[in-house]
Length: 162
Image (cartoon, rainbow, N blue to C red):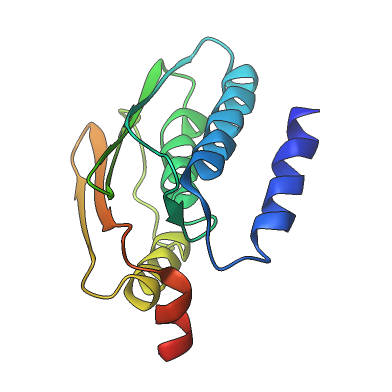
């Protein structure tokens, strides 16, 4: 049931320029619950949301690549105990996302550069020009993503003007 809900949301949300932030975060929560079941007890996942989501909208499927990367390059790539901490805070229509995941001790550096983050950066530039900041820190034992987006910027207008 959970998987079908995730797939339904992906299909439906992709038809829209923007979706309710509340729905986007529910999608992420459901995705994390499904991954937690799959990863068993070797990964501890924390997902916190603070602030007022009422009426705020965001481009669909914009945040999930950061969460997917945390799972793929952290918990999924090792049998070691791992952690994923995700926090979302909203204040005055400013969304702040922090994703932090542990990295395996014996991880090999991939020669292949993933397209996920590059695609998200392009979407951010197109949909929220001059209205976002992103900071990525790839440390020895952890990977951090800090993203801030001003959600007062209407994504559909920017997409049509560019």
